[in-house]
Length: 387
Ligand SMILES: *Cc1c(COP(=O)(O)O)cnc(C)c1O
Image (cartoon, rainbow, N blue to C red; front, side):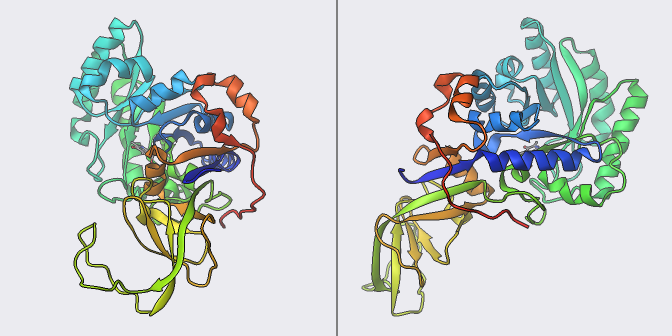
């Protein structure tokens, strides 16, 4: 198989979804599957839906359109506050959107009327992380106006913590958020069917809280795909942390000095390379670089060390491992690395199909959106779940 490639194990993703659904469901919380890190890949989206997810969320209309056109049977939620100039396509492709600007909701209303449809909105509430959301004191006034807009249905409120400001969704924040939902329902005599308390960072709160209050929803991406919570990056019991693997190939393997020699100046990145303190070492070059993936987010599965990278190369200290040209090396990806590899046109996406055979997927989805060449039978490699 060609490299670099990212191997995507659908069975492990499906397993993670089922475990998380059961876990959060035990206290009455439903989960929305967030597809932005996989760019709305239809095969992966299909796996989420097959595992019981009914609402898929993405930050970009392009990705939502991609999934819709692939024939994914789900409702679609736009995560990022709609771009005003995209209001028309937001109404066209998303069933629900997260909002924090009245001017945007008015525009959505206009296009909902024009398209003869109802667009559902959640109002985002700022709780201190300082990314999107209305300050709580402005909520009532905004709700009053949103309720008057034709073509718009206010279905709930949402909040997002631990994204920009690193503020934890703890008991205090969640209790407060829940009390806002209760107060809004009483004051306006409406039911908020979605009280969406956050993302993968809400795991610790969820595990420790005795009462989730009115919170009945979380939007999960990272914990589904990478199997960990995001406050401390700890693996969640029973989940797979290795659903994705990046594979790169050795293009040069030689014993070389550990220090550059000659007159020292800066390298292509503008840095003076650091010394590695040994006279000779096994230096290996991989056909993988910054144009393929965020190299700092990679961890090799073997005991080797990444010394550095450029746009097209990674230089590795192979330590005690014997490597030769053509050998494949596997890497675990963090969120940033996964995102970059999924975006990069240079990285082939290979879906490992264990549960649903290629034909089933291709039949269910619009054929031209599934690249049949990019699906392969599972390898025999045994990998261990975290925990
Ligand atoms: C990305 C995002 C999420 C999902 O976050 P994860 O950490 O991947 O679970 C949830 N809500 C919003 C608004 C987002 O932008």
